Image 1 (cartoon, one colour):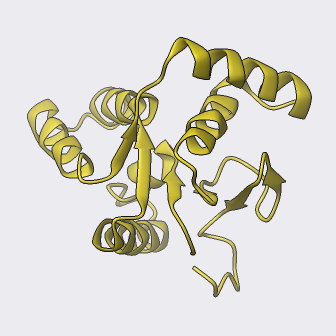
Image 2 (image 1 turned 120 degrees about the vertical axis):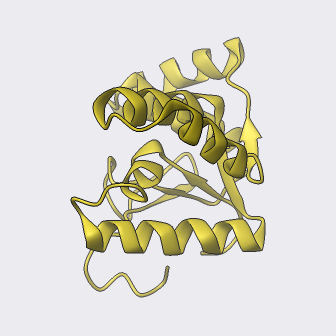
Length: 143
């Protein structure tokens, strides 16, 4: 991965999910690599979703998840603003994507990322100049 990479919530969640050991291993490797290279980017939306999903759905300890979020503060963090919300609405309409995926895209564009690491969009697709990368796609050797 060249340039900065925006990380979607599902990648963070898989890093903790013992039900999918292969995805967990890949997620942890990618997150570690992005952390070491200082090229990882997340948004306040991702932080919020991660906290809620891991503490509510997966019943993880709230303090442990809060502390884990502190680790991700080493990544660049995009603050969701009113302007990003308006941009996300436009992206959603133009590309027929969910609002939430479009908000990820607008945050990644603002951070000048070259790619988004996610399982939720079409692998290889380019949206607003961002390459969508699903790290779990077989034979994906360029990650």
